[in-house]
Structures are given as structure tokens and as C-alpha cells.
Length: 339
Image 1 (tube, rainbow, N blue to C red):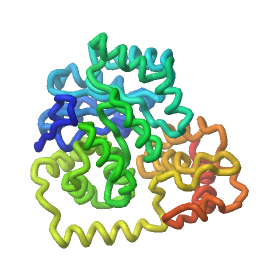
Image 2: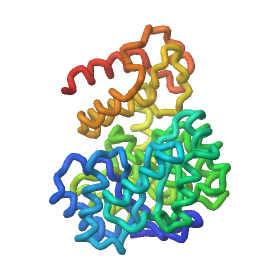
Image 3: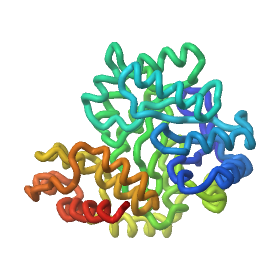
Image 4: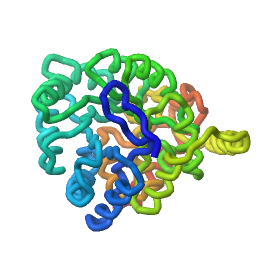
């Protein structure tokens, strides 16, 4: 497995890491087999989150069999103030039964007000810095889907890594990753297969590895077969051939009028709908086959997709000309059918 230094953290990570969302679909026994397969195939970076239901628990138990010393463990929490981040760090340590966590990230900062809270005198960043000083965590990162917010966030030197969507159909993070790399930060590509929208996962991962923008890609996996297939890309990915480039371009074009890149240009919605997250959560319910998780996240939104009044202001701002109103209508029907 090819490895790269994760910015200035000192962590030499496999170019393919383990994304911990889909592991919710399996039981603990299968989760142990999957993490053991990661060890066997040279994947040494595991990313999970407080919000991924049983993911932290499964991974913590699996580490007893696979050996904590064989992995860098990253997790994250949607906790933006000092008190809630402290609680989240403690919960993660206890749930995964760890003495320390290698990388703790502020998760999904999607509003400028959230970032302001994170960076404030009593914000999450203060809690993370203190936890790092105590040895409870080793490094600090941030994740999100809105480029402009993370561009502002990484001006702070305390953040050592940034995690953002990146794949052949989502290139909006290019300048973000360039800025991060220039600062000596590690770059982590979430949604490396576009949440399952891209049909050729191998080519997507190969594209990312060859981008010179990403330290590590973290595809979600829920089987040892997926681990083996994804790890194989990290072992042997050479330059893209002209034929592969053409195949990627063809698939990107086919998704042009369907796939939401979560760029955020459609916001703000006059009715208060968080349009990109509606589509993210629908993707969990459909492409990720995590209907209950997607529905729970959708139900947490203060304004649902059915609040759309079809003003189409969002569509006039979308650089990809997506039929957002129809897609919101589809999301309403999707979640009606999830019990």
C-alpha cells in the first residue's frame, strides 16, 4: 500500500483509508472481519464520527482484535462550542475504549455562524487544543461541504487537516486543498466515489490518488470484498491512461444534470431549506442503503424539503443547472417511504 505523510502531523498514512459510515449496516462480528482485512491489506487510517450511530463502538471493539497500534484513528463531532466538544471527545474515547485519538475533527461546519462559534473564546477549537495538550488527542482537523467556510477556517494554524468532498465529479475543493497543502496541512477526500453516484469506484480512487491534491481518500466500506478492491487501487495505481480519462469524462458528463455537488451556491433558500443537506441525507437513504440513518438526519433539519414554494431562486444560482425543485420533491417522497 502506498503511503503519504498527512501534512505536518508526522502520520504516514495509506493513500486509501477506511470510511466508517457504511459499517453501520453490518453487525459487530462482520465489523471485526472488515477491520482485520484493512490490517491485512495495509490500510492504516480509520475515519469515523460520533454521529455514525454504532460505528465508533464497532471500530473500538474491532481494534482489540486487529491491534490499536496498527492504525491511526480519526473521528469527529458536530460539536461547535467548548462544553459540547469536551463531552464529545470523552464519549469518543470511552466508546472506542481508547487512551487517545490520533485525529479529532470538527465535523460538518456548514454555516459561518458555526465557524464563528468554533473559533470563539468558548468554542470547540479551545476544547480541542486543551485535549491535545493533555494527550487525549494527537491532532486537530475540520470537515465540511461548503468550500468558502473551510477556506476561512484553515487560516487558523491549529487545524492540521481538512476533509472535504473530492472526486471526478466534485472538483470544487481544488483551491481549498491547494491552500491547505501550501500551509503544510493534510488533505482528506471524503465522498471519493461521490456517495455511490460514480459507478467505477476504482477509476475514481485512481483519479484522486493522481490528483496531487489529496493525501488520503476514505471510501466507505462494509465488506471485506470492498476493502480488498479499494486497497488494490492504493497498491498499484499508476498514472491514468487516456482511455481511463475518457471514461471518467464520460461519466462526469452523464451526472451533469442529476448530481448535487454540495457547493452551496443555491443557498440561502428564502424558506430556510438546507438544500445540499437534503440531498446528502437522501443519498444516505438511497445510494448508501442507510434509510434509518438518512431519515434521522433529515428529521433533524429545522425546515424540510416540503417547505419549497417553487420560487426557483435556487435553480437560477446553481452553476450545474440542476432541477432543484423537482429533486426536492423527490426527496419528500423518498422520506415518506422510510419508516
